[in-house]
Length: 94
Image (cartoon, rainbow, N blue to C red; front, side, top):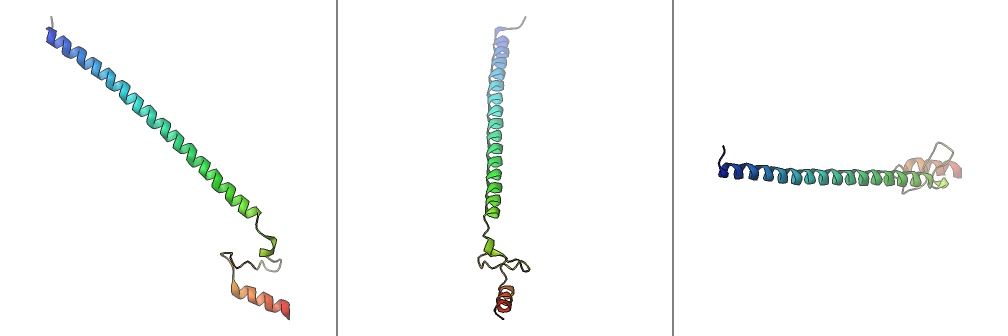
């Protein structure tokens, strides 16, 4: 038969193991919920960026390109070519 001290030690170990298990499970659950919230936020951010890109594509001014060789006439466009623009203007003025 086990002594009283051993029984107290066993029950204390059992109780602390159960408390640690509850704490650890709560910690894992919280981490999983935060990860899900982060994934959802990133997905929404990605959709917003795609919508902005589509909106800016649909709102390009029609005068930024000509029908002749797709010369870009908007100087703020990153693909603007000054030489091609000047050659086109010179050809139009002849």
